[in-house]
Amino acid sequence: MAAGFKTAEPLEYHRSFLKENCRPDGRELGEFRPTTLNISSISTADGSALVKIGNTTVICGIKAELTMPPSDAPNKGYIVPNVDLPPLCSSRFRPGPPGEQAQAASQFIADVIQSSDLINMEELCIEKSKLCWVLYCDIMCLDYDGNLLDACMIVLLAALRNARLPEATINKETDLAEVDIQKKRHLKINRHPVGSSFAVFDDSIIIVDPTAEEESLSTALLTVVTDEEDRLCAVHKPGGTSLSGEKLQHCINRAITRNKEISKLVDKVIESMKTAK
Image (cartoon, rainbow, N blue to C red; front, side, top):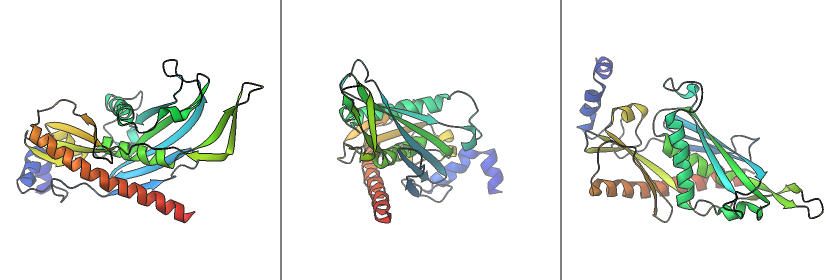
């Protein structure tokens, strides 16, 4: 009976739970799904990580390449994030060029990298106007069940903390780049931005970490990004119904708490990798 009701009237089915301050999967309104993290998942990448938030599974591989610095910033390297949503992760996605959601997610990640001062780009420069590192961050969703942006932010942060770059110099005689793969160093991460996503139901009820079904039934979606010093890095709200200042502040406060939880998780996983070695 419940399955039939859910199929015929999915919104009413969810409302019947929300009235009782809970959700169909048993969570409270302000409760995130269990989050697990694994780093060094791809042995051929310079840095990698895999994260699961509930059923949503995202993997990130970082490949570092040498290139010329951009002309408008000759003393900086750069990061190129790319989010891929292949058909294998959900039947809603089709083969072919990146869809609108994948492009929006890539742009969101790029904006957060810039606004949060995640990495000092000058540290990626080897020699001004001549040589710098470019980090290609390929983020692929393996299983899509909502809250893609949070998973992308966590997996990117963990992969960057896992990444190691070889020592690179320019030979003065030949003017060519030389790389010493025996000498590798970790990236210096300045900030630890973490996203927290919310869905709004009936213009008033706010739930955290929405599933794919909850996202499709909501009247608005919101992602708040904060760093470890409780600073607001970004607010992403792609349309939908408006939110009062009070409700927005509630979301920011929850995002600050979430940042501490995720920072603790990332630190713990990285520490366990060190002891395992």
